[in-house]
Amino acid sequence: MALCSSASTEMPVVENTSKLSEATAKTAKSNNKFFLLWGGSTCYKPAANLTMNIRKLFKEDVESLAEIEAQYPDYPAWRVKGLKAEFENKHSITLGAEYESNCEDGKKSIKGFINFWILPPSIQLNAIIVSRDSLRNKIASGLMSKMLEYAKKNSCSEIDLEVNVKNKAAVSFYNKMGFKKVGQREKFYNGKDDAILMKLQIAR
Image (tube, rainbow, N blue to C red):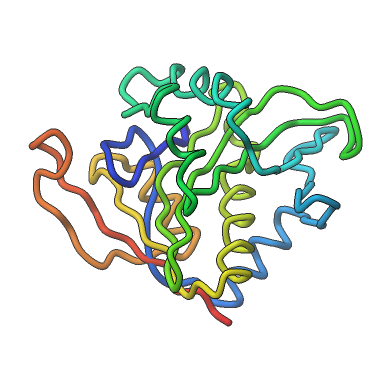
């Protein structure tokens, strides 16, 4: 499943939302085998012999993010200019996932990223995308779980998103993460496709 999405534009495969139960959060955390590291990064093992590090990204990472977007021709890419703009937005957070031999060294290329805005008491999920060569390694769920940590630390009680009604993979993923449909916007994408509005309520 290609995992990619943008809350404000058309999405090829995933995102947006309302209610997360405490049980759901615990399950996600358990399944991904998370443990916190210094610097606010998170490591877990998404597959045998692989360790993934999730860290906050910076402008220096923009080219890598644009390369991931380019793997999906139909994805409403921000491209370099749009990605750079997110790093100038004080409300915007972009996190990236990297495979490593361990969590101290051996960093490799970014294999997925998530972007969201912290707007207490809500978070707006804008984009999540995983490199084609790293699909089905729990990268998307790992990025989502890390976003939930940011939500709780910033006293956010809900996460909102929009997803193309035709993006079945994304809708399914969000449902599994606990998001619920709260509305629909007709012909929101390119004046043709509807947008499903979803919300995740975060248990405190």
